[in-house]
Length: 141
Image (cartoon, rainbow, N blue to C red; front, side, top):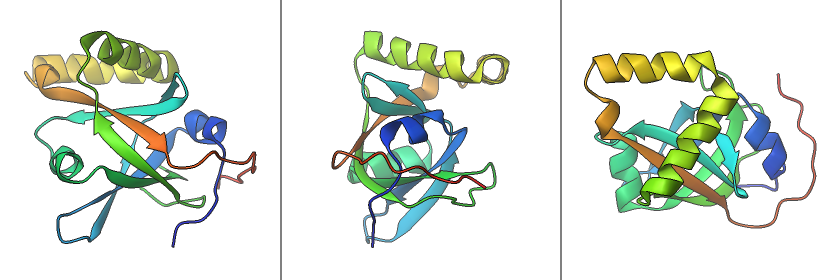
């Protein structure tokens, strides 16, 4: 069951978030991702050929929670929807938000993706929370 959880700013400020996507059979898969806030939503990115993106194309329902690099969740799950951004301008702005938040780490990943020929396969995911969130503070361990 999904509960009322941290507010949007808490999620947008977290270093990692666990993105829960769903297979066609309804089972869930949790993946730690980098996220940033953009115009009142959360954005993340992934290789467009990944299973995570295939699940998003099949089912837009998701949940998200604050986690660490290993995916250990430290907040309540928030229900939401996830979609692939198709607008080039919005995609560019999302990458700018991610680069602004993650700095040299994001630029290093950009370089590795470019050298490996995978940079053109990346897609941006926009995550919209289902209900307005109350300003609940979260203790991130």
